[in-house]
Image 1 (cartoon, rainbow, N blue to C red):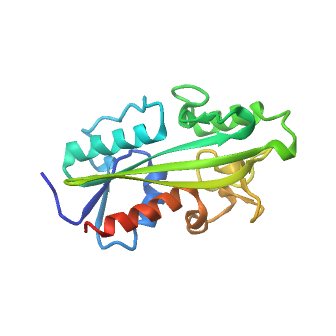
Image 2 (cartoon, rainbow, N blue to C red):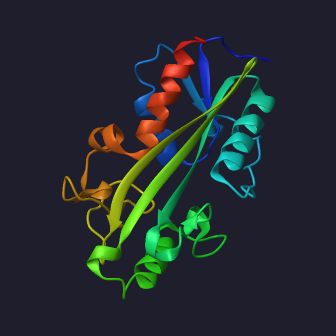
Length: 200
């Protein structure tokens, strides 16, 4: 049962993602819920072979449980020197129960012998939008390089080791507002906002 025609569900229990996505949705005159507001809905198992598969699975799960207009993202860090790894496994690169710090340590270790010119990486976010008569996907990408050591204390995930060369800053050294203007997730959610405007 739909709670409100002007409610959007962010289909995740990740507080960091909720904060970033909510900031990008702020211009819409809607109420924002996330799966944190629906503890009875189980965490979605991200077993898809692609970011698109996982994003759609998370969005469908949220929509089917609440019948709310739902968005969900899946994000992967694709490192050129590692043949695109960790990619779809980014959130569990160091194991199923890995912390953000565990994943960063494994990445830094894997890159320790890679010279400065070979540390290119792409962050890619896929956002799926599911509603009564909607099923759309949008994508955001951001190019950067992997640093040899962590820089900055903000953000989450791989942010302290993902450097934007044009700014000479990692995402962890930027404010949320600045990061959201240029990041993979910010770009993807910005595109999702334009889609959502057609249905609100």
